[in-house]
Length: 232
Image (tube, rainbow, N blue to C red; front, side):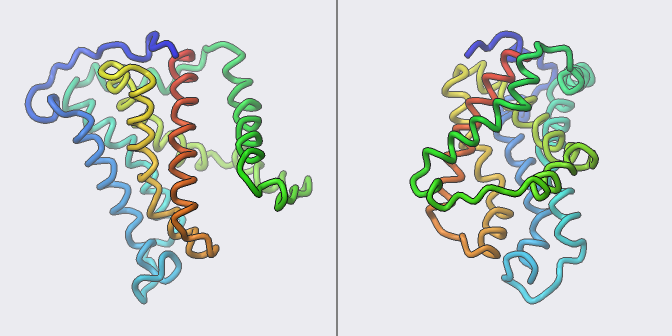
């Protein structure tokens, strides 16, 4: 992996505790915003079933609000450490679209090829595999093209934080390989409240799935770093 322009050194203008420990406080703010937003649903009867009440804001709205935790934490920390210039640099990364055609093709086709390969190599998956019919496949994927909230609440809610704020700092200190490993370990537990809720409802709440999901996120982090560094 090449750190290229993705690991440029931001000219930190802030001082104090936040500037000395940016990743620590970024993580604390991220988890606090997201997990507090998800908590009503996770505890409710519809979610984890831990308390006998219905989520006051509903599961969809709770998950949607919580998904912005990483991005909000990134802007909070960037503003505190680097000021308006740092926020401007972070925003520029989000709207950067003039990258090589191969990176668009990888995002649209290569990602699915890797996911299919990962499915094949997991023992037992092929034996239980049932392909989706074309209509169901269209219904599942069409919302991503016609419903902007799925893009805004997912990738734009998380990526300005994980890749926009955390990754450049981790690469600068540890390099792309170790930095990606640390980011994967930081990123994977972020989803646990929701995943454990979904697994409980589907009867899949066990340590095997937790470990498998963690390994998946860590592996995927290396792929994201590779794309991020080459597409700037």
